[in-house]
Amino acid sequence: MMRPRALFSIGMLALLTAPLGGCATSCTGDPRTDSLGCASANLSSGRYDRDTARLAMRAEHQQMRAADARRASYSLERERGSLQAEASRLRGSLAAADQAVAEARRALVRAEAGGRGASADVAELTARLASVQGRRSQAQQNGMESDVIALEQEVARLRQIAITLMGR
Image (cartoon, rainbow, N blue to C red; front, side, top):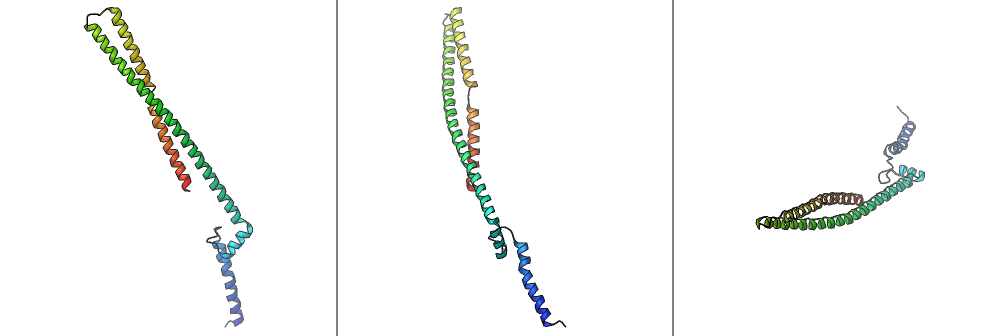
């Protein structure tokens, strides 16, 4: 049979090593979940201060990225507005060119039907019609509507990035 003193020694050894074993397995670096011994060791070693500084730097970086995304979004929004104004101006130019083409066609038809089909008049009206059609084609080619759509998509994407970054 074991002596009481030996049992007492084994019991005390078990009690003293249990917290040490628990600390070694539960030291996460998170002060919310660390045991008292781990928290004390991490606090005195500066681990929590380093972790806090690292998290602060990460938060600052994310805030800078969000601010950059907002500035880019505002810039693209202004550019989109100017491109929409340009597209509106081009649509007006295109409508005026369509009207001029229709007028030139009517004048050409009147000249040919009225018997005034003098070759100089017909040639002048034909040249005028070709010129107006060329201007219409150029206005159509310069249409910036695809650029406006692309910018709207970019603005939406940057706004989503800004919202995501501000949510973190």
